[in-house]
Length: 464
Image (cartoon, rainbow, N blue to C red; front, side, top):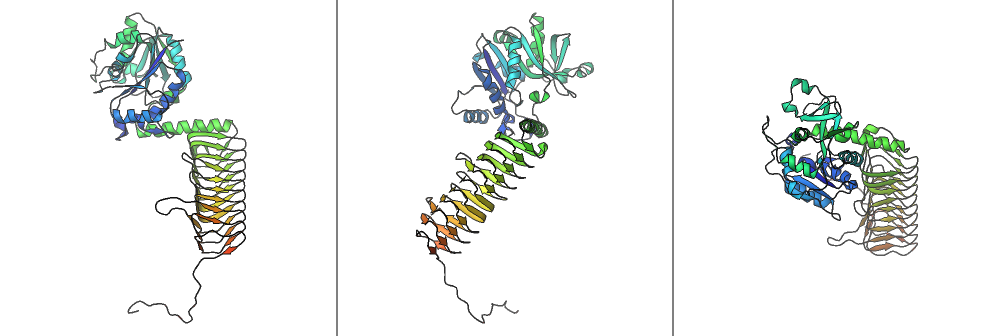
């Protein structure tokens, strides 16, 4: 087993992003670019991970610490000023032991897979310089691989390449694996006598050749894995490529996605059999969909478990955050509904248009079909919750709970002022404001007496 020390270059400002945010913190599929890289690295069981920061260093380092609250944080070294890729890796030399192999990655290339990185390490074998390469239709801006047969003898940066060299399509991806002791030797000999006045990491290839060391290339056929992000346009292109892959993987499992080009997964989505997902749906965090679940168009669903047979109608917004949301078997939700953290819907519950549920449990068959709010509530079986009704759960300082027992009917436009319990089988008359517990089976009405004044004249505008 080769001992691996991962070095991730994350010091660049990302000028072409035209943003105050450091480039490696821009998001793809809901996660920062650098977080994707660290996730792939985590499968390698590396001895250490070193992140080279520079532009926005404090922001990047704080972000990484927040992503890994329970795991070992990477070591950070700073590159100030930024004088090229070789100069960046030079900053990591003091924390790299002589034994082991350095796996050098870019923090703005988010979709590289652990298997590809492991193959690069294995090819190095603790004694060779191994480069990850790919053929590109348009290699503009990338370092070209110069080789004689299988032997790589140099990489030439695009800025310094001749016209003939610029016709080469095999490019260096920015990923390499190299024994630490050799890396240190070659980094110490780097010079900046080039068009940009920078220290190029790629120059160590020629040094390796001059020293008689083996230089080998591992060519990937999967360009998406090695695509970097230098502009908002490139970020958008990579987002769509990644989302299409996720959609295809789900469809191979049997999920019916109406249009893979209009599907976004920004977390993890587990689907049982016969799930259907319409267009323009976004899934975030941890989401599970049971057998036969149907998701209508234009839904946003985050951190939720939706049981078998449930239907989520179009334009529904579900976000469980840390508490999660549960939707029971055969439940109907939406359209235009909102389920907030702690919403727990039992089987066959109906939540209709413009209904909001937060930190509330609804038992089997309960219904709130339109224009209502249920917050901090426990709702029994078969409750019918009328349009325009709300639980007034907040007194300005504290939250209080409303209990609606089974078989209760809440008339339209009612206000239930918590803490309050509506007794089993009771009815609340429309437009009532209920401030006290009600007995089981009772009709409870709390509203002003209706008065009709005959012959009343409406006010008229002055001078009208």
